[in-house]
Length: 251
Image (cartoon, rainbow, N blue to C red):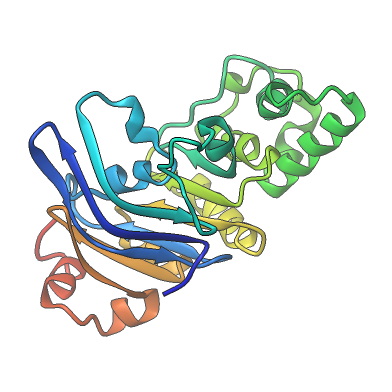
């Protein structure tokens, strides 16, 4: 299989405890892929392998192949700052910096050395529009991002990731802390964004996975049970464990 991001024979250990048991997953450009499965099955652990966030955890050993556009992301020559800019991440809890909306979205640009204020202004506005939050914050762009609602904060965080022009956006349950209306706005935003970005998202919400994703991977106890088009998996799963999980028989 080919794709913008290919992973093969992925094993991950916390000390001597094996959390991911060796599986392959490939992700295509301009698709939304959801990772589903019960708590503790390895979804977020796997997601954090994709931009090396697990490097920040002690006692973690990762084996296998991770290739982004054909390059090994675990190569010693990889610049982690560049990698995490290209493969950005949005977390479960909205985590804006305690700055203004503008400074949140401009943060990565300034960190990269951009000094042209006109250019920064343009990218900040474009990113907030892409994240579908511009109309709600444009008159308060110098106000603290922390003064907005949880759903608005999460979309500001999405804009912050978009500003540095990633190719892949990783999302770890980005709507689980939000109310249904805010969740719906973010789902609509993600469906629009996939024309320009590749999105890989962990979710516990089966309805959400079925509504917005092109492909779904079902993980259970550190194993990949099934990976297929979302429509096929939700209508006619190949594995009984997948069917049982989707029908709420465990999890």
